[in-house]
Amino acid sequence: MGQDRDRFSTATRLRLLGEQTAARVYRSQSRRQARRSRLTGRAAFLALVVCTMVVALAYPMRQYVSQRSEIAEQERLAEEAAARVERLRDEKARLQDDAYVKRLARQHLHYVMPGETAFTMNDPEAARRHRTDQGGIGRPWYSNVWDGVDRADQQDR
Image 1: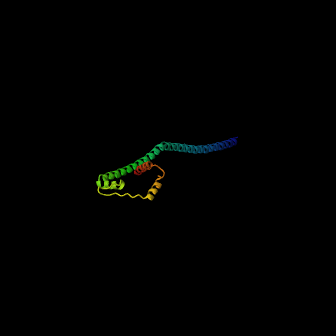
Image 2 (image 1 turned 135 degrees about the vertical axis):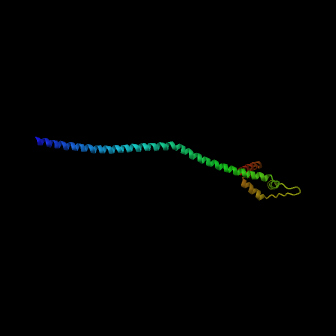
């Protein structure tokens, strides 16, 4: 009986040893899984934070880029306006000169100085070409005048 007891106790010990080993392996696996799940939880939280930041910053960044392009456009328009103002100031200064005004009057309005004789030569071929270019054939003269005024207005802009 003493041997049975020792054998039984050895078998019991082996069984207990096997159970303890199995429990250790199970605990180590559960620790690894716990570590993995904890790491996955951290990664999920980090991903959530990153997504939240992207969503929170997307609209302000879009507004910023849009406003920067609008500012650039307004600066370009301001430069164009400044250049136009400069051209108009130059033109105003030139119009203060009597010689320049006389030259414009002679050139565009066909004015002549007192004592000069003005001659106007009509070239029928040139007049026909001009009417064809302007689309003025068969139209009343006042339509052609208004078209000329409209074109002159568009060229200044």
